[in-house]
Length: 149
Image 1: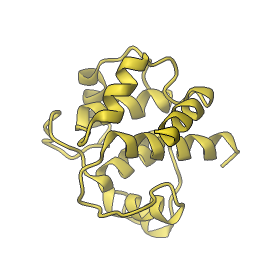
Image 2: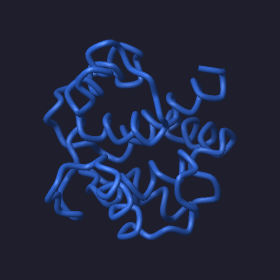
Image 3: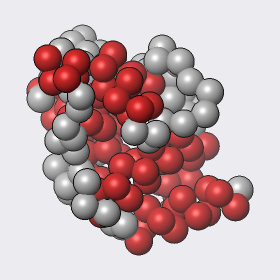
Image 4: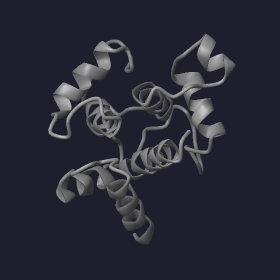
């Protein structure tokens, strides 16, 4: 719990979740499998692509239109770790390695975030993403962006 509070403090100070109400952040942290819509709802405002007040439906639609989510994705379905890596890399306009530049997509986005240690711990690209993990990944990305990556 202490780590969660530190992550939330960091994210608030780094303008990651901006002014998200604590109740919404608590719901995200408690979510064992973040949906496509919820992932987009937090990633796009953190990357300053959408306002914090954007709905899950608006964020999902924007991410889908930009090609950052798989075609035909159901907004309520759980997002996979590799798909969330691609969403994060795309939203933050992160440069990847050679293979990511040649073949941008979830596979190489996942590998890139693992290499950069934004994704840590036990991992499988096909596993659903818990809310706490999404917050940690966003925190690491925002920390690196603030540090001049």
